[in-house]
Image (cartoon, rainbow, N blue to C red; front, side, top):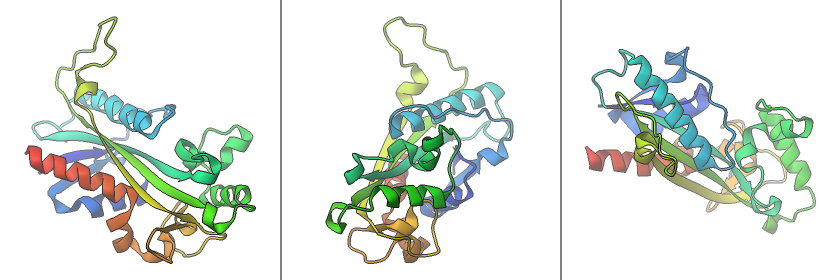
Length: 230
């Protein structure tokens, strides 16, 4: 069985990843490692943030040689995801979780209700056919290498860990509603209707969402790669 450290404390995200990957994976989370370092997500792309989280946590785990990972096929799985709205030139993008906080210079995540309210305010004059959007997820999978050696080359900035880190991209196309609908899901789910459906992610239920979501598609690619390589 492949052991993964999910680089998150978000219970919604953990449950979603576990449900999508199934029983072939043992998933630990940052709640199992309370001394894990906080990683600042300051990259300008989803891929950059995901890779930074995965590689920094992998390096930390390789140093502590925790008994939870010793002797197993262990990797760190980190993701960054968000909503891209075409009428807003791709915003909120990497700032999806703290979209509302940007107005006051805050660095912490905003409440979902505040992020949704800001999005609707910015789109209030945009007609329905121009409210196209997509959820995007990029997952980074980094191996936990023993005795890692930091790169010292003045011309090559990637070390062995970075070279072995794999990226998996998934998107789900849809549109933004004029008002939130549904009590399920989290984040922007009540405002997002995926293509081919008339209900929001917050109405469709976890089973359907976990089959067609951006994270599901990225994880499907990841799972296939792991199975093929094993």
